Image (tube, rainbow, N blue to C red; front, top):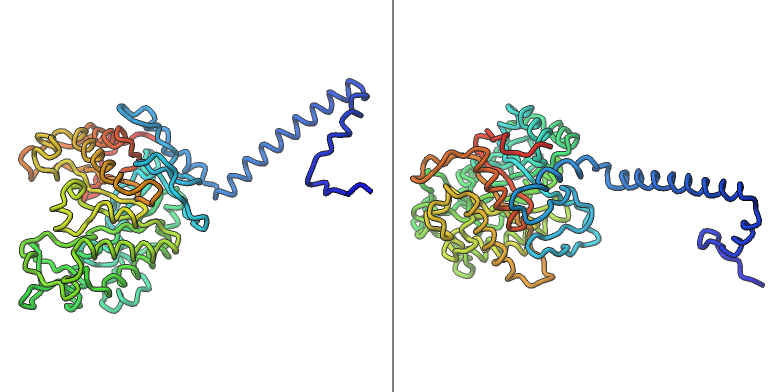
Length: 434
């Protein structure tokens, strides 16, 4: 007896010869039916894919076309939302993705926004994202003063009274950003925390005489060697993730560079571990704590640490080792922040394209120290949208200077960037239209 087969598992072509005996009209009718069925199947598949990917087609298309014709661009910039493995711009290879990792990476073109600005200038900021290539906002959650910008259920923050109501409608804000397809990044200032340091002296950096260390502005810093500080940062970050932020970005993930740091006393652990050791350990601890929550983890670092081991040692930021425990590393490569002659550029602020290009080429070379196949962070640099009047050789920064920086990013092969303006007054004319 012939074994019966499941009809869903095969098509029985053995009966096809019977159709040859049918009329020509029936044959044509059959062809028409097949064409119609194929069309219906195609439409159904399209909408099924849209549903499966969260209906993010608009975000997927919103900002990917504007820079395809970018002068000096080394690549066609992919869509912001990537539903497959992200491509690392340093290697050109797909990242090794954990099958259980449900996070959806975004090709970010973003702006920094203070907590006050997201309240007072919300319509203006949203309009920029609606009409230009901008698709992400980096919003203060734990600011430079150590204050939490919205009411969160954080026992440690409430214990010291760090929470504020500056962002009074965090739930409404998160809903709006989701509706507008704007990727929300929570800026968490790490070890520059004068508020916590003043409230909990035992967690602060101290001078050798036991007094509180204060930087050039008279502000205290917390001690990166204190594990309780780490746990506080993770608690605040966790609450930010629960509020709806899709990425946690640590700023001031370093030691102070202020006067007197050479005489600071960091405690007995500092005799065993260097500044770089402890910052790397915190980076790994934060990444392993936050990734399971479904958020990406990034960190801002000095641009000079890419090529200067001296600067890396002073602030405790190791570009290569930190990149092993981050999704994104964000070097602050503002042209105005490089000294005359750095990277062979006479006056970096006057040559934004050249300095950005040279620094990011150095970044590529540096990260190539990580063996192929091992995890490395995707590079997403900070660029300047401000005029540095405090330096000797400066120029007014407008649309041309900003596009030169962006071109410098693209020509090296990187595809993501962030703009910084402390007052959140951005040069909209520098941005490509949607």
